[in-house]
Image: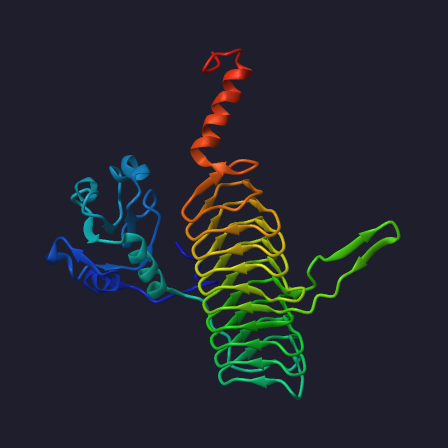
Length: 343
């Protein structure tokens, strides 16, 4: 059960309402008036609750299903017990997302500027914004309508934030132009100096970093992720990107639309990612690498060469995944004295 100290429950909903929200078909129309008040995980869902069943790993658990209702697929429908009201959706994950957004809501702060916030006289704050306690909004900042700036967040001089953006507590934004509908989580750092030095026997001399960070629309940057501003060119994050916790994107990188960088990914300077690239957890990308559209890098992959569009790579150095699998098999065989598997 979702804790109502943190989330407002807007239920209950009838199954007819659920079917409309989920773009699903209720198999037994006589149950249209049955109500559900909670969404629960399949193994624990009970009376008055609805679950979702679209993962083949849950087939055994489905046999013991005790939920009042279940949203599933046409293929899995025969596995839903007769005692459970079934709804069939073409895309049950999207159905879950839609019902979750309707069922639960975070408390919304008042649209006001806290008394302890420091807002420069030259800053422009749009309509319907919330500025939290001890937040700092410096000279020349522009913040669009309906934005939410959390407690202790800092928006440094000259930054521009679009409409409907959320900057959570303790985030630091500088040298950044941000589009609409962006979500910057707590502790994220945007626009810091890029890591640029001239190295020599007399010490390391810092190179000026005079570029910006440009975020498109609908970008999420999760907790404690860091995106450095460009050295001369800008660091660019395309529309719809999802950047997970503890990710590092270095100066001058250009990340295309819809890219996903999972936790602890590190991208060195001046890399170019085309649209919809995925880097799994702890992957590392050397500087000046070009990764083509739709390519994927497996967990802990070390990318040291350009990757063509659509290719899936893994390992260090990262190679096409089938080649990586063959390398692993060969090493295992060598370690086992020429045998294919250990006894």
